[in-house]
Image (cartoon, rainbow, N blue to C red; front, side, top):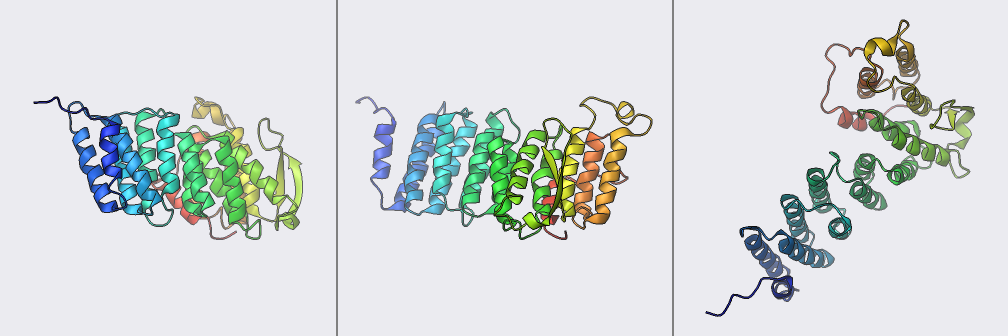
Length: 337
């Protein structure tokens, strides 16, 4: 018998692409071909990934969102199972398909979630690759899918992602025509709920957001009362006091957390004889709970209680603890003032 022809990209991919424009046949051929490759011993991950990428790309370019996304998800699954490292090439394969996937319907969402899961599995950060998260967030922002964009931009933690988040929140609140306070809290509180709190993204976001609100193009500029120095190193240069209690609180809460006890400080040391900064935090939250219906919301109060417990070492109230805290918080922050 003649020797079996070697399986390479040059021998396997052209017959699949030749089936186009019959998208169904190309889709099925790609599935069966890559299934065989992934079930060999050892699995031929690299070859299967290249085929899935190429065919998925062509299908998505042709408007075949469902079948193109299915192959894209299978590509990412193979990358996860094959422990493909996160680098420029592997990330580019994913981002190219994400850019082609429609933001409407479930297709981009499915591919994005699978891609993040891959980076969580093979990468060092439990929330996923920061660059990929930022890219996905920017994609959704450009398509005005603000809720989805927010999730990924917050998850990234990168400086540029925080600036993009500020740009988006400014657009979302109609350049200050809507009360910007809830939008400020959406950009700040999730970072403060991290353990330890992610201060830099919160500062970057709020600085950029306030710059928008105080600009000449802002509808909110007339609502600004005064500015005062923050008197805190590596923080907001100044506190912008306005007629929005929730916007004022977002700034003061961030500065207060920066004055919190250092990580590793126990509760006795942190609070001292007069409860120290913990007392100031509780007073701040109590004051603004009376001034702002946004801050007074149950979900916001639960978030502030968690910050008090984890950062200021305040004993949690009886019955505290909510696994859906962040989701509930974000869902509540567009009511009240």
